[in-house]
Amino acid sequence: MAIRIVLAGEGGQGVQVIANLLAESANAEGKEVIYIPNFGVEQRGGVSIAFVQIDDKRIGSPKFPKADIVVALSNRAVNRTRQYVDERTTFIYDTSLVTAAEIGEHVMGIQAVEADPRSQRPTELVDKSKVKDQVKLPENAANIIGIPANDIAKNELHPRVFNIIILGTLLKATAVVPLDRIKEAIEEKLGAKFDKNPALRDLNYQALDKGMSLVERLV
Image (cartoon, rainbow, N blue to C red):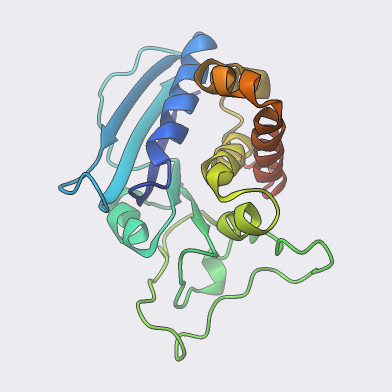
């Protein structure tokens, strides 16, 4: 099964780390993989975009016009990735970082529940009359998933594992590689740090599990 993924966020949000871990995991699983990083004009403070293709057979082209999954982690990232969305795309964004303006009910898709487990209400969209610099989410997406990953990282875990929460969300939404492969890739990249501080291993795996718990499997 072929899957095309676009991830975008501000510099420092760890977009390329997510893409790299996903690509390495898929490669270890024996799949064909193409990963193309794009840091934009600004190396620091600019929008960082990663393009990932994973397939069971040979990939014909390194580029693709539309994505199966788009992950946008800032308002600017939403605007930069809009062109890769069509009626088959699942669009994932962080409700604690992206200020959504208005969106039709027909494209609401699956909305994640707030971080507080006592809350049974879907994540609410912000009143556009009270907030500046809002962004309109793509209206043509098949599913739109809002998750409060940044708030969870800050309030429940640690800000530095924000991108691992996103990785868990992406893994659950696509089921493109087994969880064990992702953990192997994380160990390969961070194992030395984990050995020095085992608490970091637990923290990263908690973040991975938390991210997976935020969405249902879609494909």
